[in-house]
Image (cartoon, rainbow, N blue to C red; front, side, top):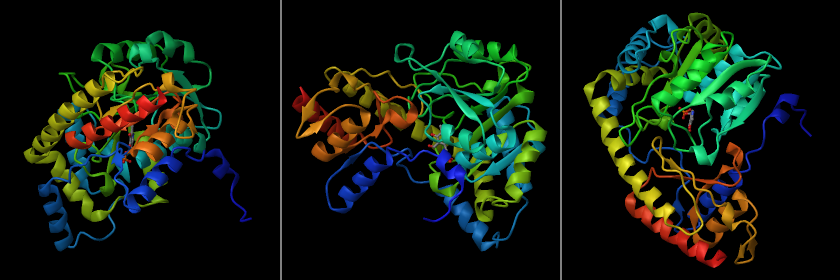
Length: 401
Ligand SMILES: Cc1ncc(COP(=O)(O)O)c(C=O)c1O
């Protein structure tokens, strides 16, 4: 046995990985699997951003840069926060990381002490609890009920606050629920946080551009005058610009927190890849950036409506209508206790495994998101694939009866 550190035991083995590994193996073996599992846009990165990367390479932007990033990118991000989000961050209040994920991890490491609690609404993105635990903190899960569109209420939030509460994490629009809070609902939560001046807020806004049904996106830190100085606002290029593989995330917040994150990063990764930095600034500054995002958003809106309409018509399935991100999160628990093709369905994992095995549709069980009654379907795929996949799910459910 190789002598590993105890902290490795803190991180849970992803139970959903088995399902995605199986889907990949089936695809490799030539099985026509309909994939609703991917958490990334199916579009390619807009051409003007790729061109900017080629120019950066040709200009020799291949050397070390400052830890936060090049000043041009820092400035472009600060301007973006000011312009799009009414967040008055200066360039010194910005840093970048290898995707939104790395920014969040650095922030937990910079903010949490052992025993600190982070209030985490569920269903949640799978990495939050693991990152919180790695940083010595404890996730305090507050359940967002399906009957309330998976949103927590001010009462829920108030009840969860205790002497050990260090931070409140809000992710709207949410992965995996596909639900975004309205500005009024967020304001009501902000009112509660405002009464607890020691609580720090982590606002994960990476799906801000992907909102539907005319919903207005607002940044959490703008909702009460006391919040700007204790909120970290996370964003990235991954979802809005279809740049998941580029690993560009960024965060704005109080200078002391940003400096602490830079201190950590300077001893870890140093900085994000040099020749992605000017292209990342170009994406935020060139009007073509906003145009491409809007084009993709419109497609996602159409697909999301279609997927939700079809899911809602399936027998015994309930599904909250998504108004953000690119996920539907239907409740499949009415089928627990049933069996088909030799598989007993007892939870979201066995449901997903049997659906994949028997009808060749890949979905993500909600188990790692705190909901083992639900599965996540991504609508970042074509309308044809959506129809084909839902037809297959329909056949699968018929077998279960
Ligand atoms: C809610 C949420 N936050 C953060 C991330 C991380 O994004 P990135 O790919 O930029 O690391 C994801 C990715 O799926 C996400 O869904």
